Image (cartoon, rainbow, N blue to C red; front, side):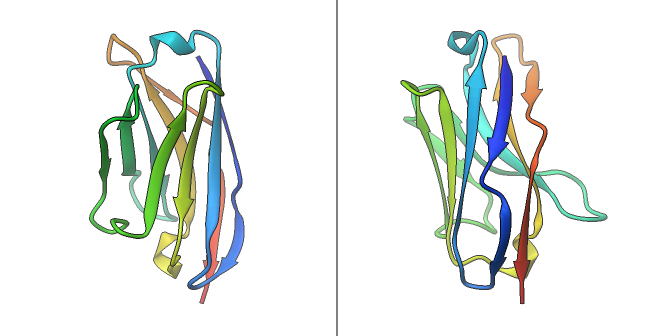
Length: 116
């Protein structure tokens, strides 16, 4: 499985961005997907996750009500819609896919910068 993120960039406080993650390879083996982020000088943290069918989602408290994770299995693409962005949302955002063994596949990351 390979993951490629896109959609990062610079946005002002209160603005919106949409991230995409295109999966390729043995995508049928993916059991869950999610988005993590890592801010400068901070540890990587989970932002949102979804099961393979997209029927179950979970969010970090810091993004609940502002971010929405979704998945289009026909396109093998994961999305993260980010609204009401804050400067503290500035980070490199990573797409992650979980395989049946529990192994995590990571994308290369995409930078989101929110200016105040």
